[in-house]
Length: 223
Image (cartoon, rainbow, N blue to C red; front, side, top):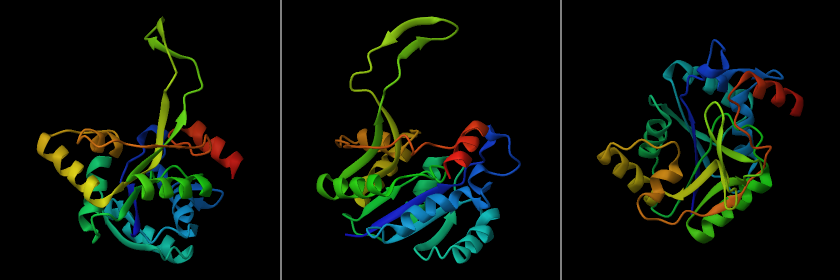
């Protein structure tokens, strides 16, 4: 059973206000995406990595592959306009058996702990899939300019990545979404709507998504 990572890196990252996509911004003299790629490069359970990106950045990714010895990167494919398209393009490129595990991870979650990654992979091996999530610990409200009501946070989780599925299950879910003209925010939503039970692996607050300039400031402190 192969474990193949897909890193969708085609996003523009406009919310950060930087002149280039946030995954290619340097933090402590290293591009953000490299931190994420190195996590999978180091993990002994991972066999290969596919990156989907804007063709404008293909050469940069190739240079980063050489510079940081990221030899598990087996291909760089063209990303789509949205994350779902980028993942599907990479999935369509892959040569895999139906039970091989596909590990999808955000390019801008650079601090994924190794123990969380390993646990998620092993959970997916045993149960067929795994989505890394963290328990909701803050008070949750509903409202706009004022508090309308409070949401019971029992059994509430914040979804992270990696999200790991069997190749056949994820491909079928993505093809169904295309047929139904359905756009999801992540892969778990696509697989769940095919009737599959999606399993949770507990994640880490360190595994945050770098979205704003404040997130970059926090990342600089942590690395």
